Length: 129
Image (cartoon, rainbow, N blue to C red; front, side, top):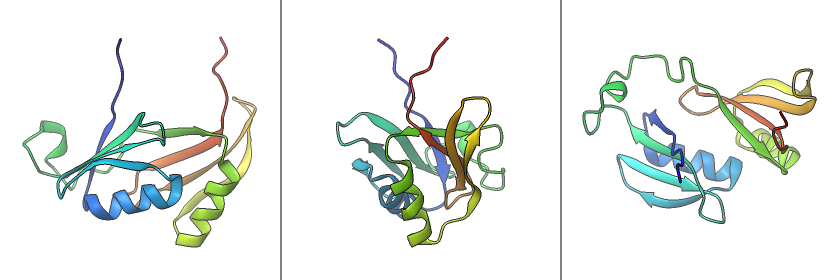
């Protein structure tokens, strides 16, 4: 079995944990000042948050690097409207309002997290070949 645990660099782990919990309702399986593991209610790991410059990981050392350059966090959910409402409540930046993506034929919207990572939230769907 192979699984992917994406790790993104953040300025403030605790603030980012709080943001992702408020928006998506993720559980925090492991937290500290430098690292956190976020998961679904079933404890499937979704995203790890790593403080910039800690533990000497080569790609996580330079905080001046544009966060998310070449990365798109794409969340498929059956709770899109609720998540969109939470974004309004906490005052986060909405990049694109809910619209129909003509490629996937699914509704989606786009936001940025506290560190500027680009996030697409889309209706849940199964990928079809």
